[in-house]
Length: 138
Image: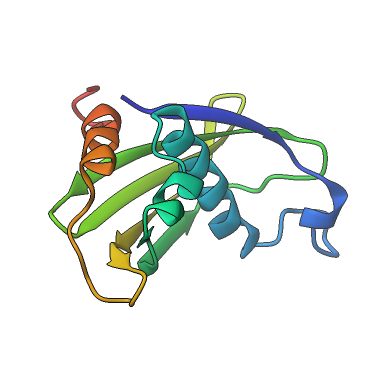
């Protein structure tokens, strides 16, 4: 299943050319995955209270179109794969169904001492709920 959230582009997100500054898309990926986690009961606040953190180990983005001020965007986020200690989450940034940017992040799971640790059960359950393959449509 994938998770969609909407976001209206504020002027502050744009550059001198009037388009969304490229680095803001990584923040958009974060917004999408944060709300995806929250929707499944695995909020970042809950993770941190229980001593788990998810630092970004890898990030990738591909730009195929541009968003502009006041565009209503949809961030579609889903889990591509996960293991005992890592999660790969993809996000598509869309406007009126048109894909503008695609990308993913790989998150590692660490404890409060910054040591790699297993994903907690509630986060594994989140991953299972949000596992999606656009090619397969599932």
